[in-house]
Length: 315
Image (cartoon, rainbow, N blue to C red; front, side):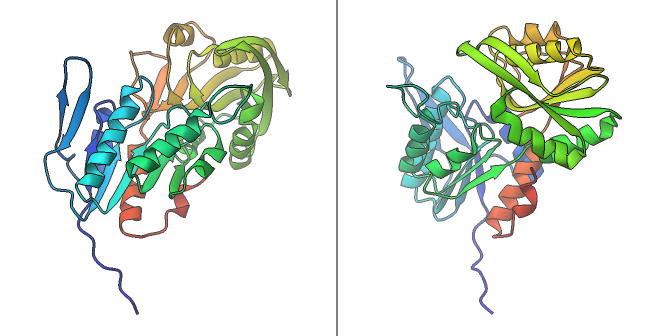
């Protein structure tokens, strides 16, 4: 029987923007974060440097690539530095894959930003990508390297079960999220409703209608990201007007830009449940944060030891 060669212990490093989640992942992994120094120039240019050897081993580079673009650029430079330092495996751990909303040409003369970012990560030297709840499943196909696409449902489902909502109804805030909503509804043995919305432009909703009945139901909206909060807040208001008993939202990536926090505070939502894939910009009593660090740490251990990770792909 052939025996897999023993590889050196992996090393974990973090971008500056991903330091908070990286520390949690490292804690659950049982390792300290590696030492990276960042030299900064007066014009804003920066240069990361590994202050320890990574030769011949696996490095996990942890950090989301959300705007500003410095987060993505820092990750690319760290990948390149690891490659030039002769790391054998370079696994990019991105709890949130930024620029993912640009996954197709929805009008003439626009870029496919998600594909471009995939190309950049691969060209820089990444050998594996690990992320969670991509905005569109097809983004996995933009890569020519393995992609571990984890699902936040493994984090949200236990919390949702513990709420013990007797009249549970799963809802999607738009047609694009109906597949996710149906998957949650199947697992929770509940009904599902879908919102149909039309946008006037990015982050501005023109019209929204509800497909299904929510009267007397405890509604839980599920989605992959919340940005300005306009869609979720409007959907919650509409459902309460339609007779819903209560409305919550379970959303993986809490971007929460612009007036989002104020909208959430003043909304009819009972609570907004998110993961810590992105750090919250401010405290909000209506927001409950569940950690994705244990999930990533477990999958990272399994990948390094060449064990199956299929049990972590529960939708």
